[in-house]
Image (cartoon, rainbow, N blue to C red; front, side):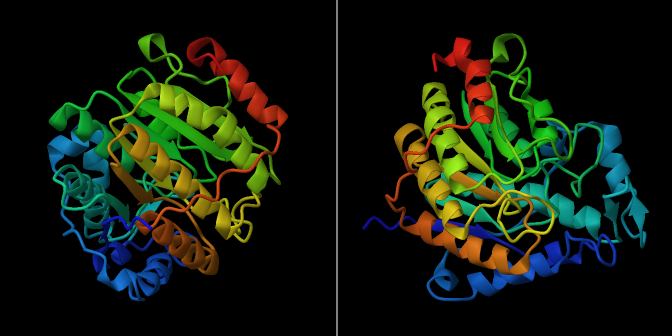
Length: 341
């Protein structure tokens, strides 16, 4: 069995972000993950030192006005940006750390200090737009990393896979015209935030570089496996990325209270196997998973345990042989002219 060197980033300061009483994106989410990281064998995983993102790193994704609007919340007990998204006195620091620590983890992979990484961070990021916090998100962590890999390290092709149950509108919009970054998402649709139809495939030279696999309410393991097998993996291999990033939300779990997709804990393990194999095949193994959603503490704990086990020693369970549903066929049809599906 091959055992990979998996690095982890986490920090108590992420828990200082307090969006308000009863909010699902609560500090207890990280407490559940820290319980996992404190157990054998995960307690021995190398920890990457967290750091704040620089203005240059944030500015590759977000406008100066946006950064300033989030910074204005610092020290204020409560700042509301929309019905779902609110900051507390320490949110700005936590958001800076989430983005910067994601970059630090990617740097550790590039330096060869670790082979792959998992970022247990909050606030999440994939809904954050260039100029707007939304959907519990302030800075788009995965987009900041992707742009850093291209701008600071000259990587020609970065792949972002998003398996959070909500479509990552901010990430899609960041790269919709950018041929250097492919964004591929599996998500419940129609659902919040309303983006992510199969026909949204990118613009200009980036046409075909956005891959949306919208899933209906009630979709389960076999539906996801078919979408991976029949559309996502063939397109990703054709793109041939130099680095693979995952927006790893766990709210598609059947026990999550905020959505209606029915994935098992095992499904997150199999998707991790798939993305690990893809990274080995195309990107020299370079792989990073960043925490997004996941609001059942029990499901989050069990799913992160599964993911870390598979990151350290990828399995070979495969993705089954079920048929692609009509939603997947729509995605394949939208992408066929670009990727010969």
